[in-house]
Length: 79
Image 1 (tube, rainbow, N blue to C red):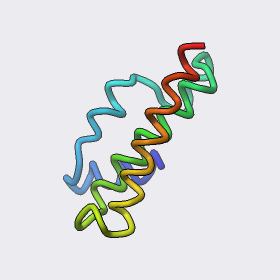
Image 2 (cartoon, one colour):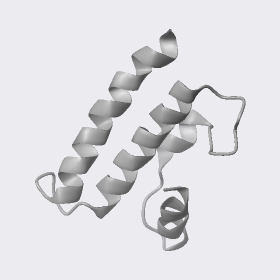
Image 3 (cartoon, helix red, strand yellow):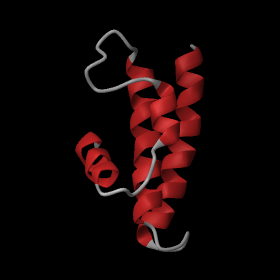
């Protein structure tokens, strides 16, 4: 997913601000599993949003679902 993010950034598509605000990457082994899981869903949502033509397309629905999953993982990080 990070490679897809880099591809879109190089081609000037998407900013991925929510993912960057998390300040986490796959190499941050000191972060919790819940934090990584949350970051994956946030990044997945942003990638799907970039790929979506509208909210009813396949990627559009994926974006909505990733947002729901990202929201759920917040409770896991609080524990």
